[in-house]
Image (tube, rainbow, N blue to C red; front, side):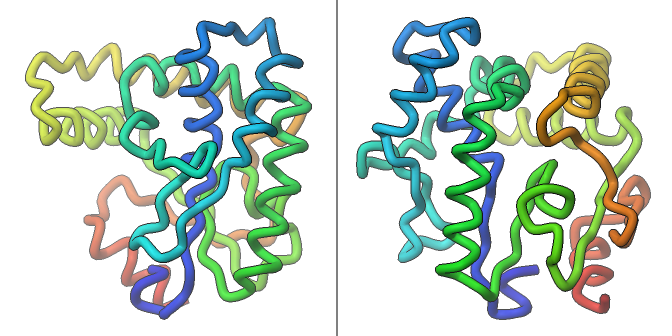
Length: 197
């Protein structure tokens, strides 16, 4: 969508995944949240906007190669529920929004918390079964052949429950968002629909 509209793109999930990778690589736990937040702040997570898509950096070095690993995916939801970390990330995302005012951004709290006054908001969703099948296809494309779609579906449902019931920045559909059920739509269909809006 950003490409089609000639806008910048912000992947906020990459920021929380980078924080999670830092936690795991530093052998920290979610319970050590104050120490984790201090280290993430020192890492100065930001993007290299000269790359397409923008590359997430920590300590001025790319960390994008790490953020999609299975252990990061497994731990990102509890990390993203850390209140002090969310406050830090929201501030950074708003700074990015100020620096890049023509922006397509995605994330579970973008329309509700970070940019509540955005001109256009979309709430994309699909059934857990469809999302599990899509994730399985992604993993197979990465060369992971032993994929359990039933387990993936259960993990997706558990993550949605955690994210929608957390106190800070819960996953909600803003009342002024345009809801798009992508369950029966192709990638191109989804982008086309968003572009028309």
